[in-house]
Image (cartoon, rainbow, N blue to C red; front, side, top):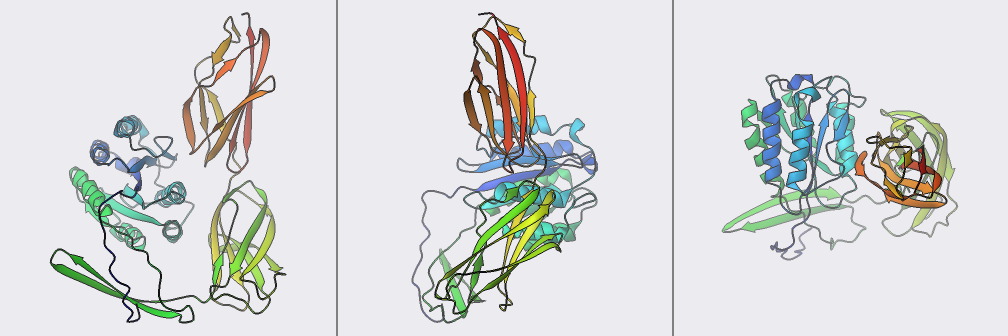
Length: 424
């Protein structure tokens, strides 16, 4: 860098980094006639995952955008079973929310450790999304998600799918016929595993904002090199939010401004905007009281009334044109759903019962709490739906009141009550 040789960085075998993959499949009406090939290709993809790969199959159409299993998994059998159950004739219907499906997949991937890939199978049509193409691309980029698009069908929007993959660091492959889909998936999967990430500490003083760096790679007898120039921003801004999912109503934004050169020599004024679809729906200003010798300036601001939906918090430092920080948030006003699977008798001679539960939410679950006679059990949850939860509950002789509460990450809560009499 800047004519200073850093030295050699050798890539060796060893523990492989976990790869996180969402396999997202379009099951809208336009996929009629392509379902069997789609299923076969998805199963072929699954059969090639490795031990540390974490995969989540997901489907989308006008009625739903949802995973086929409750969490990322390395179990081939579990994924194949979900694909067989979720990809059937009855599931094909409705319009195509392609851009919204990218937003949802990014939400599921962005906080996971390791490389993040979205394998995106669709014809590229979109006729129902709440978000634009630009919003979907920027959201995936901010979340560090590489989108590998595979176009399928007789009429493919190649420019759209090509842009999605190019802008997010992925690859776009066209499958002219569904029968070529299997090979396309396997090719994308192989390319995703041939990526390496190098990190090193720059030897250049922070007072020099413009840099140049050259990378030379030796592979066998061949040598490859690339050259890039970049600029070091003099000041960095970080929004340190305590959460990214909120209930409708007031939202408290907290964060800090950091000076990468060590100090800020004057007071700082912060302006805050709440954006939806790139339009401002609320602004606020706050002046920090931190002394000018500090490297960190804290701020906070409360937006009083915010409705459900996806938003961006944008923070700017007054007088510093390029100092902007952004944070994606989701305001969720929908309560979780509690379903008791099967029928429970209100009278029993048993000393305990098992309550089979299915808990679901439109965005992200947090926990289920089961309470009886002051004793409670708490189950921590993840994802949009958890099925097969079967808590065992001890019964007292006589009448038993059982309360089941489900809470999502925004804090929305639903409660169901059971009244069971035991004649033990």
